[in-house]
Image 1 (tube, rainbow, N blue to C red):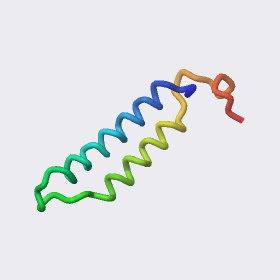
Image 2 (image 1 turned 90 degrees about the vertical axis):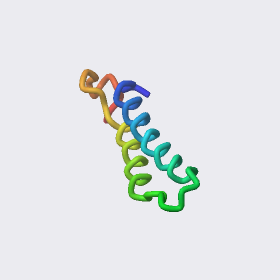
Image 3 (image 1 turned 180 degrees about the horizontal axis):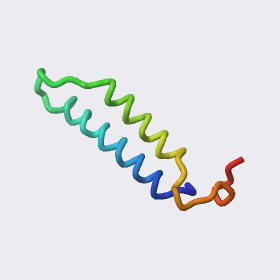
Image 4 (image 1 turned 60 degrees about the horizontal axis):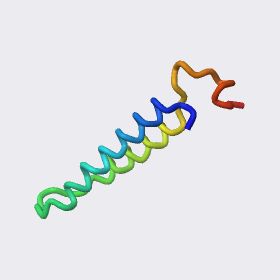
Length: 65
């Protein structure tokens, strides 16, 4: 993890979205449902955060090719 700020932000945002949907799944209210589009967006956010580079990091310092 060479770009900590971006990675942490992406992972925390994705986890917040997933946990929100998990709360909907476990609330025992049949009116609330699991939104698969939000789960997909959360997974995408985690991937983007993991692969993004912080603005103050050079390509050479993070080993980009």
